[in-house]
Amino acid sequence: MVRAAMRAPYLERGEEQALAVRWREKRDQHALHQLAQAHMRLVIAVAARFRYFGLPMSDLIQEGHVGLLEAAQRFEPERDIRFATYATWWIRAAIQDYVLRNWSIVRGGTSSTQKALFFNLRRLRAKLAVDGTRSETEIQQEIALAIGVSTSDVATMQTRLSGSDLSLNAPLTEGDDGSERQDFLVDDHPLPDETVGEAIDDARRKVWLQDALRSLSPRELVIVRERRLKDEGETLEALGTTLGISKERVRQIEARALEKLKAVLISEHPEAVRRLS
Image (cartoon, rainbow, N blue to C red; front, side, top):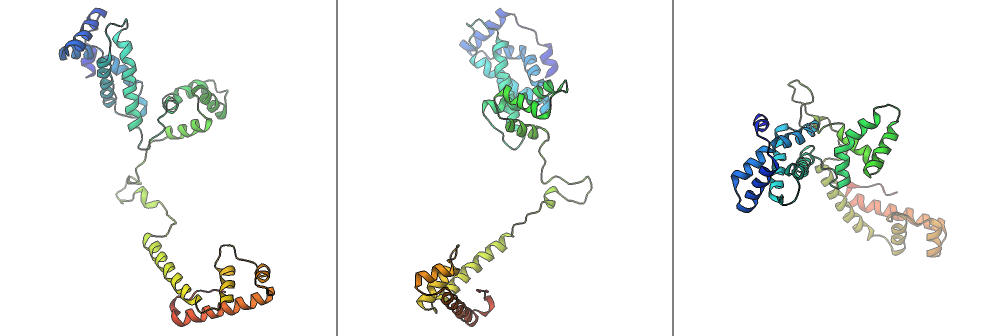
C-alpha cells in the first residue's frame, strides 16, 4: 500500500478540481479512486504522527483512508482551496478517533480539551523539559495553562500515558506454571456464600429477638428499646427522667430485662444465643 501510494502521480489543481466535480456531480467511482490514490501519501504522512501510541501502522493508515473518503464526500470544488488542505483535517480526525477508541480499554475524557491533552502532552512535555530548568510541578502547570485544563488532569493523563493496559489473565512469568495476575489479587470481602448466609442468619435472629421481646413488661420493653436497640442509646439519667424513676432503678430494670431475654432465647434457640448484656 505504501509503495503504491508513493508511485501515484501528483495532481495539478485543474486535474484535482475536475476529478472532484466528476465525483460530486456524476458519482464517478474512477474519479474518486484517482483522487484518493493521489492523496494516499498524505494519509501515510498524517498516520505516521500517531505511530508512538503503539497501534498498528496499517490500521492507522486504513482509518486515515476512511477520513480521506469522508473529505472527498464533503469537498466543494468551487471553493478556492486545494483538496489536500481540506482533507488533512478529516484524515487527522479519523485517526485520532481510532486512537482514542483503541489505545486503551479504559475510556478517557471525550471533551475537546481532554483530547487536546491526550495528543499534545508528550510534545509539550518534551518541549518544556528540554532545558532542564523547570521542576515537574512547573511543567505540569505550564501544560495545564497552555491546554486549558487543571494540573490534576495533566497528572492523571501523564499516568495513563506512562504505561499500557495489562490483562489480568496474562501469565505472571514466562514459565509454564499457569499463574495469572488475577491469582494474586487479594479481596478482603467475605465470599458470596458467606454474605448470603450471614444475611439469612441475621433475619432469623431478628425474628427470634422480636419473639423474645414479647416476654417483657411494657416498662422493660421501653428501656431495652431505648437503651439497646437504637443506634444511639439513651442514657440512664435521661431515661429515668422520662419514666419518672432514678437512673439506678433504670439500670436494675434493664439488667433484669436482659436476663429475661437471655433465658427465653436459651430455652427456645440454644444454638444461636447472643450475648445481650
